Image 1 (cartoon, rainbow, N blue to C red):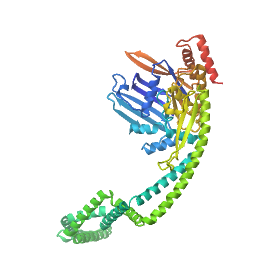
Image 2: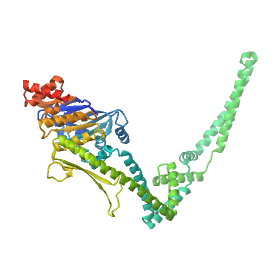
Image 3: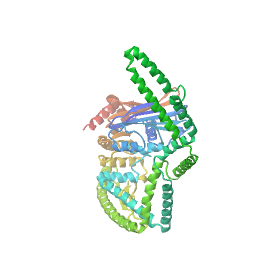
Length: 560
């Protein structure tokens, strides 16, 4: 859930930090004070499109930083890992927009793209207001909400696994049956490639081994001379190491004849003489083994060039080239047994399709049954929210292809769409065609109330959900938001004191003029300040004994 939100130089907000509570956060204030600007800023954190106009006047850039607690959001952590973000219990998103419109994004300190923000946004926050209906209007989200409500994820996962197998078998069958000519061409190509790789007689040892050998052959004369010089210095030349050690040994024997304590060092010098003789012999043998072979050098150069060519054609390493050769061997065997394989694959496709169809129809039947129940519950919620004449319907249609056969997908065969008729006499229309933002927010609230236990979006934002509502209806909405906030963090902008009275945390948004600039301020209200703010809202901007008494009564009623 959203913990802290920092805003710098965004529109009329110069420097602002808000620490949100875990349950129902209410934002109130005069029209134009900047309440919706805060929601717009949060939208940018979630990947909304930005432009230079949002940067505060005379500021070089604006900075937005949001901190989220994602300790219990396993699916989000998995999603973050998939896009390369380390799994942690906290998530910090930062976005900078410069005065010339450039933007930078960061997730936990690492550079990110706007697309990455958009990818994770729906798992963090749902914004619902006059123009924002992120998940509610998306068919995939509508389907997933229905499936979570009906506990159908296990069946859907089984369908997804079977769909993947079915698709894989179909693709292999298509590859074999699509074109005899194409198959022959591929078979010829694979045989040519395999022959080319096998004739190269590659070994995983080639890459380093050949480089070492070419280095030795290229420098054969130097190696011969170096080894000869070492042998000569150690053993063969006048004044060699062996000769001088022999002289030293003789002198040590003379010394030991006088001083018996040094006698034991004679054994040491004897070993030294033998070690030097052995080392000298090693270099003699090395010198004799140095190969002067221009023909072999030419062969190696050609082999290295061949390996480079094969790398460009097949894979970046010899190991991967050999693995590729093993794979095309299997493809050759597969194509050479085409008729036998086609018959087997046709049988496998039919079997897989029968199973997939059975599972998909089972899922579709369960969805249809669950959709009826869910529709009725949502209608009941809408009635309590002042939309008593509304009709809500979840459309489930089995999709077919041009031949009339079911169009299988990893999620089943259903096209699911939520529809509503907000007023008497209207036809059912998709939710995305609902004109009123206030109606959409109440529809969303109704759905979220029903799906509270099934829905896993941690933070829900309602921007002026009270549009067109009366005071008594505001109490109904407030109570529902309060209940919903036990399972979700709620941020709600409202003008209704009856709704605001239910707040767990209450923030007052105000606008001041300082140093010739208009600024937005946010104050977190204590209990007495909350009473004063509700009193102001009740009194049309003025406080009175009556409005204060009424405000206290509203708060008291929320406890019942």
